[in-house]
Amino acid sequence: MWREWGQHALNIFNALTIAYFFAGNCIYTVLMAVSLVSAFLHHRRRPYQGLHELRDLSLAPPLTVIIPAYNEEDSILETVRSALRADYPDLRVLVVDDGSSDATLERLRNEFALSEINLIYRRLLATSPVKAFFKSAEFPNLIVLSKEHGGKADALNVGINFCRTPYFCTLDADCLIEPDALLRLVKPMRGPSKNIVVSGGTIRIRNGCKVVYGRVEEVQLPSSWVERLQVVEYLRGFLLGRAGWDLTQGTLIVSGALAVFRRAEVIEAGGFSNATVSEDMEIIVRLRCLAEERKHPLRMIFTMDTICWTQCPSTLAMLARQRRRWQLGLCQTLWLNSEMLFNWKYGVAGMLSFPFHLYVEALGAGVELIGYLVVPLAFAIHLALSAFYIPLVILSLIYASFLSVGAVLIEELTYRRYPNRRDLYTLLGWALVENFGFRQIVLYFRFQGFLRFLSGFHQWEKVAHSADSLT
Image (tube, rainbow, N blue to C red; front, top):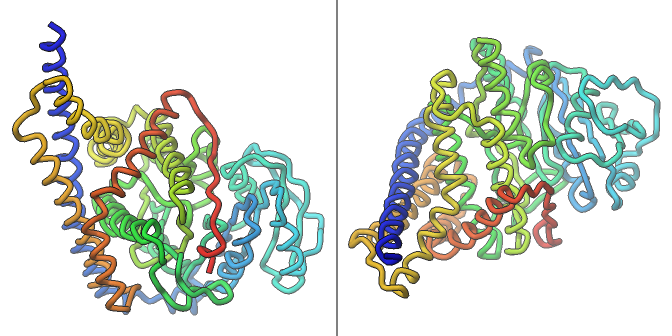
């Protein structure tokens, strides 16, 4: 009897696994086709985008870059330099030190000649107390706030409270932006479509690159296999995933590492939330809920050619921390906003994007991992696998490698941030093998994040970067 029940259960799970691979690869295929068209059209229009008009004719609205920082003594100076050197006419840079226990605040004070001052602070959003304000004698548009530790979302809300501009940009404390990145993010928000409230950019890996005074001067691949495979992941995730969802208006995720928000709508939505460990995704989903409540459409867009360079984990231990947190935050956000699932009121986001992120990205971590494990288990207890199961799984992994190669080729045919031909061939090689080994390692980390969600775990795992990855 148990063998009969076991065989039925195995058949059902085999069908779920095959559906998972089929759904994931089919949707990514559509996203790749859409992204390819978008990339070429955007690349051809790029010389005529008129960024100089936005800058020279004072059409760019005042903008505040908010940099939340907690124990970022090794990277904060380069990030602030990068923001201060941005090509933007009316820019303020606001660093929020979230009660760091290292030398983050001390280094900022020494590097930028900060002196403590008294400023007016209004708490439109509830936050932890602010302890001190500092202003730079050398850079009049730089302000540093020191507050009690409350988490990244809390630090961002402090920045929003202090911000006096209609738009603000979130920038992670380990990131560098290209000179025209802010202009490119803001430009579509000042166009004919007045309902754009969020504009997100592309995130690239800076590990291995040559950085001079807050700017990436020479793009190079990192040396370790862990970092190089993440380069492929980021290319696929942004050039295929984010770009495709943007064109279908199904965006659910905008990276908080670099994104511009319209301040009024974020405040109306209640600011960033500590209810999840992925405050950037959660605020996007909540803004969509706000739009439905107001019966007024709000758009969240992705700009492919806006580049932010971030540090990725250089060891498997740090990668595990990052991916567990991402998966935990994804599950928390989907759970808190489950009313969007298959809800036609939310359009593509509710009918396609939300179900995709739920089944393929959230539940898929468990489905795929267990799908691998049932193969030896079935042989061990003498249960029959479908004749198509193993071949279909292998073909799905091979096809996923094809999608990764497609992302690398889109990068080469359009933006070419890796001009060295050897780097291109190296990336193509890693794209071919990424799904055989590395994918399963990351899958295990994601599954751990899913289990933490089920257990009610709610803790931010900070990723520490090695000294080598900072160069």
